[in-house]
Image 1 (cartoon, rainbow, N blue to C red):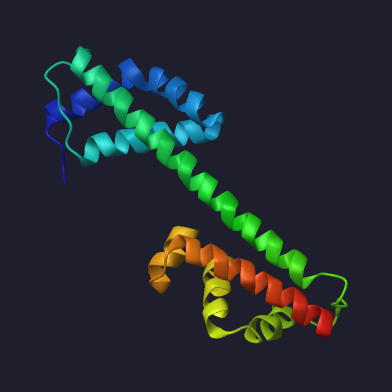
Image 2 (image 1 turned 90 degrees about the horizontal axis):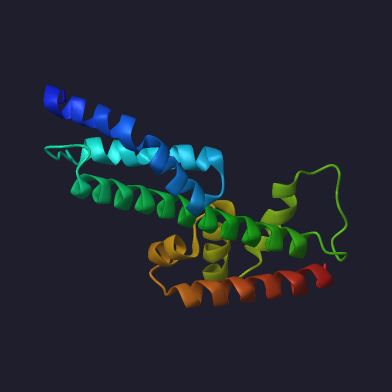
Amino acid sequence: MALPTNRISFIENCYELYEQKMFRVALSVLHDESLAEDAVQDAFLQLIKHKVFFPKADSDDCKRYIITVIKNASINIYNKRKNENKIVSYSENLEEVISSEAVEPDITTNEGAVCTPLINSLPEKYQDVVDCLVVREYSVRQTADKLGITEANVRKRYERAKKLLRQNCKEA
């Protein structure tokens, strides 16, 4: 899909006028230069995708719109990173449970071989939650949507699964 010449020049003008301002806004939200650069790129891709056009690139309306787009792009990246950090936290918690002193590390098997029997010992509803959160690395929201339960229920099942894993480790 080719852009009309006036839209191409509009996007180019916006880039020349606002790229540094957009970067500063994104950096103030994300506190990371590479993520801020990604946010600027995402914002310009959204401008192109949504066929944004103002008669003058330096108008106040255009400036406000572009600032709104970059703020939203930055917040989206921030939220995505925050959710990824939650997943890592869940994974680390499960690894701590599985590697507690009750389970001797077996150098002849890999982690998956040690984890699978323990996870399979859980009731199915807990297995599903652990599979989504830890193995597939879904967020709590994605897990809730996939399993058709509430986010609070996902967190509670995960908590109970960890408790059962601790008990199973002590019995082994």
